[in-house]
Length: 621
Image (tube, rainbow, N blue to C red):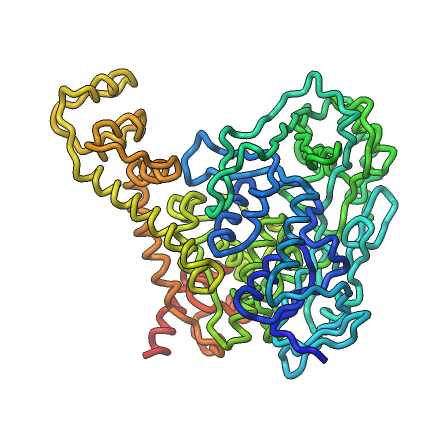
């Protein structure tokens, strides 16, 4: 019976990153998936990134993950969202070629040293003495392991709904994982049901684009990965198109709303608040006369389009009527009907911050099984679970990212300390320190970890170091160099309706003016540096937001103070006086590792934190 350091169950976005991370760290790794051909499959829209999600990909990339590189190699449209706003909320997004993205990931998996793939189904997790010792598969029998990462996606108890039609499965033409779900319940894990969905797919050859708004890629396109120098001009880019629902569309849906699985009572699971079905949109935003739809191309070698904005579980005939009422889609042919899918999840409060389960040592969970939604959230959990599975095999301390240093840290901390009662999606608004934790500086924040873990090469890390040395040197120069009045700079300032200089002024102070950018002051910098755009952007941001950044750094110091106060694993909350029964129950259930985590548990009051702080000081003295 073969033994692996790590077994990855599932080949979706979480499974891919987990398998690559574990094997690249030297662990003998086996990925078990139904079909090799579905590894890296984009089950929903063919897009990577978006608001809050682009930041996750940048961090995955800077740790040494693969998703950013895959997006760059297979992207057919690149856009920077919130580009007119500050760096703190800017997010990258790209349309990917669905087939080429999947093929890219399969090639990477196929060529990865120390990683094997088995086409099979895991039916049982083998646990002995509270520790994972192997798995039992449908075809291969028992396989031993020291750690396992379950990345089951939407397959646990997966059921797809189109009207009254229910098909078991985690994806079109793929089975569900009922036996594994039953086994997980037998291991005393609670399994809840969440719901998500997808829209119908459309034949682009039958879409009338004549009067639709076009949306083109940014020029030049900006790569996701810090390891991609640029998107080559030879890489073909395609536009998206914008249309919208109308009163006729809404009338069709409202008349047949009772046939929707979510509103007929057929589905009881909790749906996605931030990516609602078209039925949900009409129920929740009844006053709106239309809802925008983005027609997104699925790839260069197909005519298929993804209509982002009309996810639905309505019956097929209603979908036909609804789609044909939309501008540009009157004669469109539907190639695949939309459906709602309900699937099993394990409450994320069952996890430690390492994504290891509290009940079974060596067992990690990542992706939608933890109640999240989205490729990016799954991949972020996947790389962290893979890293920690590999570290656990070596008996090393787990790798945990904090809220104040990463979006990944916020994502995981939210899951394990607060849990989620609906599919969790990452947003910039969830991140308290987003002035410092930004997309543009993810390489600076994460590359050191990537190198230490063996996921980033020394050469890549040194290139990041050189970039930030350049940024630091130029910022210091701007803060120490003055320009006298009466130069050509005054003319430039007047031209942008700024006040001319009245005395020698630091270049950094001039740059702080809202109407001034680096290009305006560069000629008066004493030398031509020819800095790249990403370096200039960071210089401008660090100078212009200096005061805000300093205040946030002080907030982080206060945050870190209570994060450093550890709570012993075996602490008896019942002996701590003045804590209410409710708070004691919550602390026992969530088992926070430190005072910061305890502070973020819903219902744990500031007074309770003060009581805990005093008790822990006495306990540790």
